[in-house]
Length: 300
Image (cartoon, rainbow, N blue to C red; front, side, top):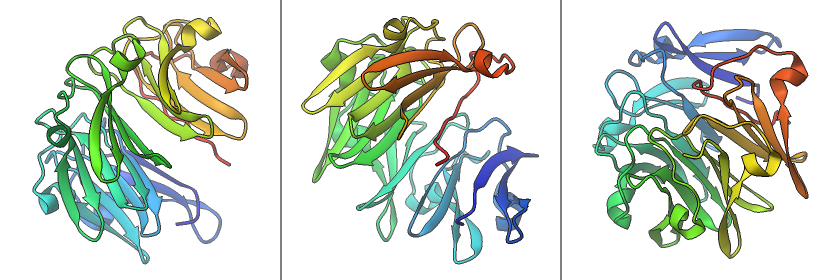
């Protein structure tokens, strides 16, 4: 699993595109190989890799969180909801996942509108993080974002109060933080999709706020602050709650979104400034819709 891999849904099956031993791109139907359940064509896939292998996460028609897991040359399907006796998940939902020194972590909005963690450290278990932290429930339709860094484990979601909340684990306890209240930032609409990452500058959470601007909640020890990246860059307004994608690499920090002009825009931070680039115009690319999903990563 050291070659490039792309996962997507076709014919209600999870497919993999990969580079084979001859250096050619090939396709595998992972649902057929693993005898896993069929899945809706519009679901969002999640995944991560660690020392145990590659993990692809999806929610098929049974509304269970499933893992397609590759180790020692074989793909297998695991029904993690059945294994952990955890709650079901809305089909339209998406998972967030990462691995760290404590184990493997899958975060999602369950059907009970609580944030649940499926946690593996020798065995898979279900943890209701909303109940553990006494936090507000998840706004229906909203997604979660998560990562781990040197400060601990971080899970972000839009709560029923339309505030961005962080469920934060710094051994041995999980706690809830209302980042919107802390930063006095704008609310987030129903169905909001968040993106988050950590780098040498701190911790970052991005979302399309109710004011139609892309906002960043930014933590640089010891404080969280709100930054209106649309105002800072004089970029175009965004769909409230729309999809954002983000990552950091040697070239700086990158935030991608689709505003009302139906172009893909990049908000790019190369110290000390944020700037807006219309990537569709620069590349002579095709226009798209503000409502679609977007993903981004650094290839090297």
